[in-house]
Image (cartoon, rainbow, N blue to C red):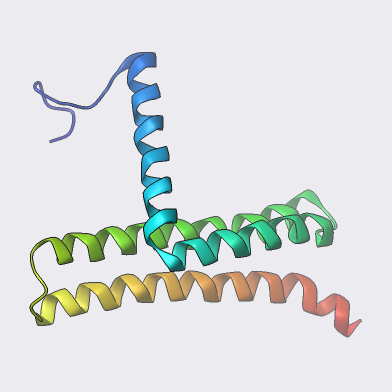
Length: 128
């Protein structure tokens, strides 16, 4: 239990700062070690300003930009699953393969969500 009596979970302003530093360290590690994450960051840096420019209202801008962030979050989770599996060895195991495939599928579904959001917002303008 994370909030137990002997918990290592930080509390107070210093604890929030420590949690922030750990998060930044995770982002740096993912960027350094994961080519998929680097690609998604690059796509975000291109698509976010484009989404802001193409969005005609605050809601459209939120949808166009906001749907990009969960892709990167899922990639971080997928990478953590893969790292944990690799920690326990390189031998092939059916469940390890399933876990990796399911993590990849989560990233894929969120990428499809991006295409759907962008398509539903922008395609009617092209058709009209």
